[in-house]
Structure formats: structure tokens, C-alpha cells
Length: 295
Picture 1: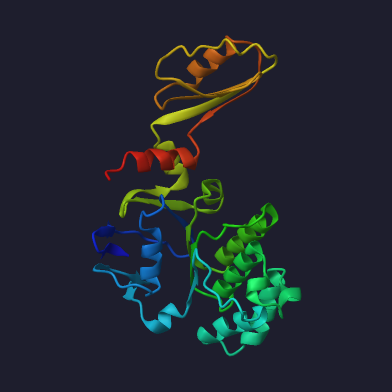
Picture 2: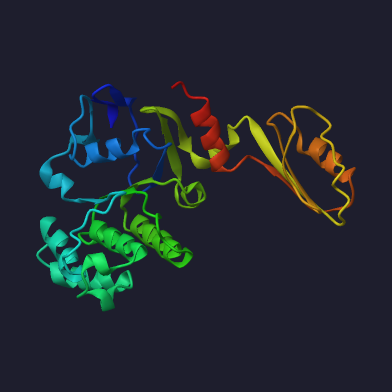
């Protein structure tokens, strides 16, 4: 998609947004609430029209037939609450043009652990099971492109692992995935690249490892053999203690700081049993990118 712009009244929801989702990869689409993520996803699905810009799939405009090969999981519940679970899944498979809707529904109910709930109304499911059903709806017709808006919301740790495994299975099938989530540790775990937006504009994009390395800071953590760390004082005003306990200190330093310098400062406090030093987590990169973006 190139140069997407969209205004709702006085609000500029999208301001010249461009991004590419390479075939067979998972790209994380990140940003604070109101940054334009959902608007972008809905525009790809044809649910809203854009004011300017171009959205293509395989370098061609997206027709209705092509969109039926896409799978979409919205952040809000997009199901009929009084329809039975199995009927719901079959219905959406038929909407996508699948004549084998019933056997496909059976397969995905089993994969999502919902077979015993086939005849229950959707509204009787827990929040987590409704989320599983929404994912099944997005996948039931074997999509080529999968667009997921907050797919991990409401899931317990076991369901999160199931979700991650399903995403990896889809990658092996050659599916392209655009995924939005506020759970940045999960994004970092499953996505090869990310696009960060703020106030309707792209502020950072690229390979996850590369953009972490591009951060202006580095994080260090030391674990000591004893508890004599309470009196530690940073040797430089540019160093920041981010956490401290009886036996552990975490410090954030400028990226130009050598690991050996930080190690020496930590070692001077007392014997070390563990020391780590490296680029910050994706969450810190996200905060840097969003806080530094023009509003």
C-alpha cells in the first residue's frame, strides 16, 4: 500500500501511510491507540474507502474476488452472538466461496478445541473461546493474506501458544500475515519485521533485530553473588538505573557505551554470577519511536 490518506471530519486518521508486507512473512503493525492501525486494516479489506493512495496485492488492484482470498480478524467481535458456533463457521466459509464449508468447519473446530461447543450459541462462549472462533473464521477458507487486529487479546498463556503455533503453520503454507498487537513481546517473538505508526504516519519500519540495534540506548543487567548492591551509584549521569533488588541491577546506557565499561562498573560492586548487555527490547524501541514522533 502506498500513500494512504484518510480523514474523518477534523481527524487525519492516515497521513501518507506506505507499507509493504512481503509474501510469506509476518509483519507487526504497531502504534498507540488512535494511530491509524485499524483504519489501515479496514481499508485493505474494503470496509472503508481511502481519500488518497493505492492498495495492491501482487502489484495489482484488489478486486472483490481477490478479497475473498483474504482472512480478517477484527479487534472487536465480528460474529452473530445468537448463531451456533458450527453454523457461524460454516456461514463464513460459504461467504468466502467454499462449497466444502461443513468439513472445513469441523477441521477448524477441532484445531481450536471447540468441537464440543459446536451447537452452543456464540454468546455462551468465554471471551477466550470467542477469540479462538474469530481466528477460525479468518482461517477457515485457507486465505492467502491474513490480517489480524489484536489476535492475542483475551487469550490465556496456553491459547497464546496455540495461536503462535497456528501462525507458524500458516507461514509454512506460504500465507502472508499483517498483525497488530499491543503485546510487544509476542510481536517480537513471531514477527520478522514491524511497522510503527503514530498519529496516522509511519515513524519506523524494518527488520526487528535491525531496528532494535538502531536504538539510542543499550540495556545491561547484572546479578550478584551477594546482596551488597544497595549503595550502587551510577558513574555517569547518562546512565539510568531501571530496576534494583538485593542481588540484581538493571541499567540503561547510551548506545555508544562499551559493554566492558558497564561490566567493570558492575564488577566493582561485588562478585557477579551473571551479566547481560545488548539492544533494548522492542517495547523500548516502540516508546522511543512514538515519543519522538511529531504529533
